[in-house]
Amino acid sequence: MKGDRRCLKLFLALLILFLQNVQGGEVGHSHGHNLRDAKVTVRCIERERQALIAVKRGLVDEFNHSSSWGSEAQKKDCCRWEGVYCSNQTGHVIQLDLSPFSTGKMISPKLIELQHLQYLDLTLIDFNGIKIPDFIGSLTNLRYLSLYSCNLVGQIPSSFGNLTQLQHLDLYGNQIQAQNLNWLPALSSLTYLDLSRANLSTVFDWPEAVLNKLPKLIELRLDNCSLPPPPPPILSTTLYKTNSSTSLAYVDLYDNHLTSSMFLLLSNYSTSLASLDLSYNKLTGIIPDFIGNMSSLEVLNLYDNKIEGANPNSFARLCNLQTLCLQTNHMSGQLSKFVQLLPRCAQNALEYLELSENVLAGSLNNLTSFSSLKILYLNANQLSGKIPESIGQMSQLEDIDFSINSLEGVVSETHFSKLSN
Ligand SMILES: *[C@@H]1O[C@H](CO)[C@@H](O)[C@H](O)[C@H]1NC(C)=O
Ligand SMILES: *[C@@H]1O[C@H](CO)[C@@H](O)[C@H](O)[C@H]1NC(C)=O
Ligand SMILES: *[C@@H]1O[C@H](CO)[C@@H](O)[C@H](O)[C@H]1NC(C)=O
Ligand SMILES: *[C@@H]1O[C@H](CO)[C@@H](O)[C@H](O)[C@H]1NC(C)=O
Ligand SMILES: *[C@@H]1O[C@H](CO)[C@@H](O)[C@H](O)[C@H]1NC(C)=O
Ligand SMILES: *[C@@H]1O[C@H](CO)[C@@H](O)[C@H](O)[C@H]1NC(C)=O
Ligand SMILES: *[C@@H]1O[C@H](CO)[C@@H](O)[C@H](O)[C@H]1NC(C)=O
Ligand SMILES: *[C@@H]1O[C@H](CO)[C@@H](O)[C@H](O)[C@H]1NC(C)=O
Ligand SMILES: CC(=O)N[C@H]1CO[C@H](CO)[C@@H](O)[C@@H]1O
Image (cartoon, rainbow, N blue to C red; front, side, top):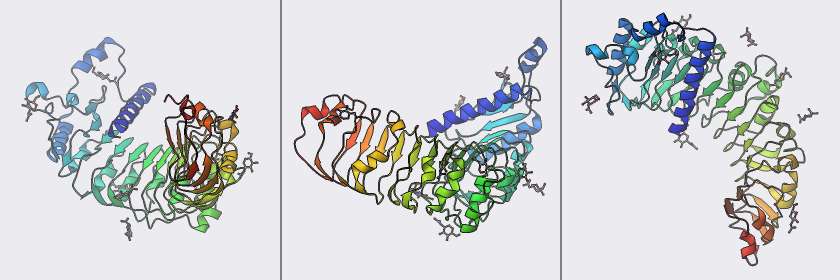
């Protein structure tokens, strides 16, 4: 997981640098002899070097990460220190990646001397329960801020509302809270927001803040936030009619207290959503037709709820659906009826179908038309009869689980004839 995040971060960092180059921004271009010569002699700004040393004093260098951060003559250029990146033109520190440090005692207030900082990554530094300092809100040039799993506590400072250039904010996995998200709308450039595991249980108007006021948002992660269901006034008012994002694609609201009203709230994003996770909430009833209109949806995770079933339009236009996880719900009726509700246009797309721990009955159908299926979980239902031999033709299958049902009959080699995966 950390590896994946690292890759993503590196990519984003490079993207930000690339964009700055395209825009002729601060970071240098490498044309012309003079500039190239100049680059070799770039020296960091002394004030910023002192600030970096102060920041480092707050951290524990268990793995000798900062051996390049020296005071010897040949190590004096802080722009060459590991994790430090300076503007080639101005010499100001613009990026700071401290994530290789493993623990920290404090975040030094000297950090704010690095006023040109655009990228700050403290991922996975264990600060052992200190608060997020207010002064981070003064680094107003930040585009990227990650405090991912830093073991921070307390309130998210409202000074974050001063980080108006921020595009990527990751506060995942800290023991933090917010009484309100009034600071969030000021971050109108945000494309990525992860507040997962922050306690937002009293932020009743959270949909206003995250869905209505962040016009560029692409990815929203609020899992395990004790999010309350949106109150009726929010559902009926002007939500969506103002600054909601038209590019919201990834929504993860796993493990909250949300009810089926959430579907209505997301119905406005029917053309942009690629992935929706509402698992481990309090959804009830039938999956509504709005969902069936989300034509870009590739991943739909609704497991661990109290969903009772689907109707003919619940999945109708989900032609790109690759993953459908509905395990641990209250779905009843014939499995064959349910299978008929799956979109025909997704027959070659669907790879993961998980329906375990429901009360689906009847016999197992011929599913060979779902030619890309890799994972098929039907365990812990009330299926009966024989396992059809046609299963042996589904050559992409990697993992099947039919256990804890009332299946009978003989399983032969034919059932496995093409299951080479
Ligand atoms: C800045 O200069 C360094 C050293 O010459 C070079 O490695 C780096 O790619 C340059 N960065 C940009 C963004 O041009
Ligand atoms: C840290 O790295 C430096 C330079 O690579 C080396 O001289 C020093 O001995 C290392 N210290 C430890 C404790 O490993
Ligand atoms: C945020 O900006 C406001 C208004 O400009 C200012 O009063 C406040 O001190 C700033 N907070 C921080 C932490 O920089
Ligand atoms: C979240 O905060 C509320 C109110 O401060 C508190 O009652 C609740 O126990 C907290 N939830 C968790 C999971 O810590
Ligand atoms: C939710 O967060 C708590 C800590 O805040 C953690 O202990 C728990 O495992 C998380 N739950 C899930 C399902 O990830
Ligand atoms: C929508 O965004 C614009 C530009 O950022 C802002 O001026 C306006 O107040 C916003 N409208 C609402 C209702 O938030
Ligand atoms: C789904 O989309 C179609 C065509 O755009 C529209 O007529 C229908 O009302 C939509 N259904 C729902 C439930 O939003
Ligand atoms: C299973 O379905 C496929 C495609 O719909 C069909 O070609 C095949 O004959 C069926 N097999 C059996 C045993 O019914
Ligand atoms: C993303 C999206 O579809 N936004 C629409 C939400 O609804 C309002 C008004 O109904 C439209 O103007 C938006 O384009």
